[in-house]
Length: 193
Image (cartoon, rainbow, N blue to C red; front, side):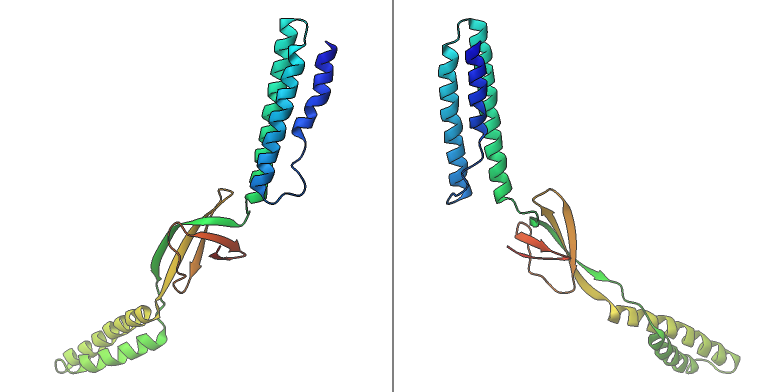
């Protein structure tokens, strides 16, 4: 039983942090894996010296649990070192048109043009009705023409961040992104990585 306690005192070494100075995160991860495997092999040797089979089995279970914990800690440290909270991938680019608004200029211009054309039709009271109808129709048409002229094109870029969050960014010009591009979010905009 004393060996189990000595083993439990040695097992925390398997969960020691990654080496502080490593040439890269992959090198640090491999070093942590190697350290965990060495500690696990050493712990299994200690377990073999247990006097009863139930004590040996418990010792091996404890050693395996600590080994698994050390590997998980190494993976988490690697993931934390390589992930970027503001990084992501473009998942969709949509182009659309924002409807413009017609103003008084289009209505007035269209109304005058319609009234002039309506005045050319008919005689007497019919001429007056045609002038009024032409002015109303022209004002409506002028408003619609102005709406069309003031409409603007936009690009909507949907990004899935490494954290799983999805965000959409709108541009008034072609940003040059395509689905699958790696990007980095900066405030309310996005740029290539």
